[in-house]
Length: 592
Image 1 (cartoon, rainbow, N blue to C red):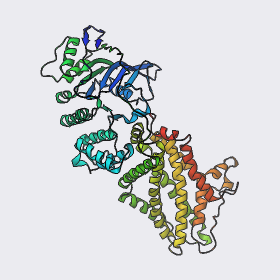
Image 2: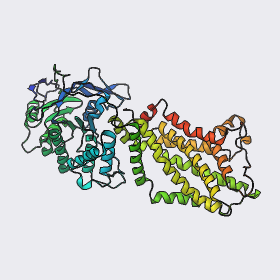
Image 3: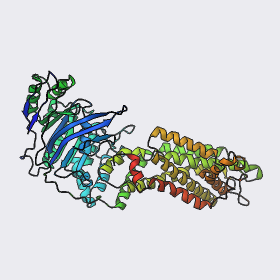
Image 4: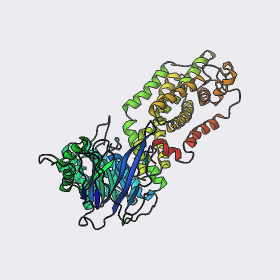
């Protein structure tokens, strides 16, 4: 194929050059072409103008080869890969003339499991071991028996050279774990679980030393030979050893394709003729290419690869068979994965000490609480303290439930590992035992100190049940708020304002009769009012059932408390899931 290099400055020669990009049939007998034509992308600026970040890039890649995408920072490498993988940010628009052919097929949902995408930042589960992470991925992405999945996981651990760290936590952030190079190989192995035909890697060697980078690129090159994959890999400035592993090169500069063809000596000859300069013998070729781009020696250069007649030809035959496993199994696997993570991050000594300490501090204030008339205010205050525990702690426990998993969920959804609804159900189920443990620890400490004189097991279970029901209501409301407010800082502001309203109009500080008539409805619709009344009625007594001295919900009369709490527990989840699953999808990403 012939490409015309246009002259846009005095320092650039106008040359017509025969590019030698294409596949080597000797490497694979089942070559499947990934062709792209006139990829043009723009993004809107605050001024209202649009900036072109991809400018008419055309070319093709084939199974059995590794293509490198190089260029200076900001040249469009990540955008190029995102466009190929159908993962562009919604703020970026593609031109109508842009076309991509995956083995003769346009993009469809069926391709999600045929295309792996390795992001620049490692998206993993720090709380899982290497083997656990891969096994959970296999259970979601692979159909078949347990033995077949285990065999696939062990095969990938061996191919990625992860045997020594297979049972070590992946780690990341504050969690100590495996090295950066090993973590990158875990990301690659995860994408290889479903045996994709195409693999897009966004700077897989970023932040790694040259030796580790060489190992990773060597692994990718081995995949093209053994599995016949097509791999496109963006890389910033590889060493000469890493560069020698690539078959083809696509060099970008300011969104323009400056070179597309074979890597190695062919690329060097091209750039030498283009700039009328010689690459010094002691130079690493990629460093020299980058130097020409940074020094504006390639400004205005843009190759034009003509669209061939066989653009839409290909041997890829796929059918959308839905998800690999059933709805039930998706829910079960995600629940198990979430529970393993919870045991590492939540159910630890600091968590237990926190809940017990909170209960003890609250109980110390009401040691030996009686049930005489003189104890009425203390008993109501005791119930209000219970309310604060059942309100604040569950809300804080679930508020960031989905934001914490936003990246990993987005990755799973884009790979068609599972449906959003099983994820939502599994997360709700996995957080319920944590809330139960939290409330039990706090209630045992507080109840023992407050009612050791005449409390009983039956009365303890009654107040624990009331505490759990009230806590479940506010956990549901916290999940709903966390679902609809995606900005973490704004989420905390909204939550604090909401908490102040809950306490202020709970009927405890100011009785409903003393509130301005236009605002009394706030007490009636406030779930904290129902929680306070329920907890007051659940406190143990030696005599007749206790009735609070204030009347928070006398006008209008409230519905029965069990029915109220049942509705309040279910309603937030219906709001999140209405219309079905669409809100769940948009919680975590705008890319699904």
